[in-house]
Image (cartoon, rainbow, N blue to C red; front, top):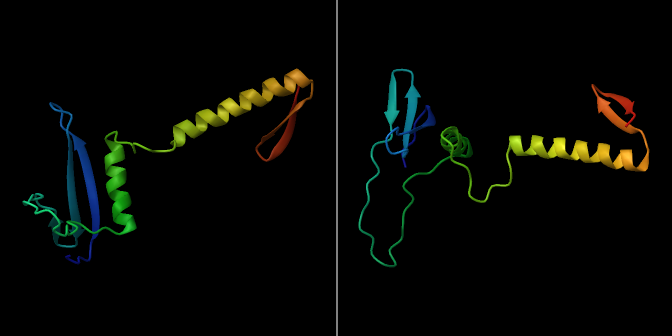
Length: 120
């Protein structure tokens, strides 16, 4: 694998006609840089070792994932996102209010690092 001094970054775009995702990889350096050229497919014989076509550091892999996320790609087996977490937290807050109303206990809520007792 090649070693470069710049930071490997990825960009993803959606084609407006087909909605296919296009990827670009590049390394910017002080006087120019490098780009990832086309990926080439080669006939594979059964049992032949498959060499990696790309090796990424964790930071580089994150750049690739962020680029794909920016065009709407999400993990198939993902476990939530920031928006889903916020919705769940709001739901739990509502359920606490309902539960404390049913048992008649004032609800203690922490806002701005201070405890507030709310009547239902």
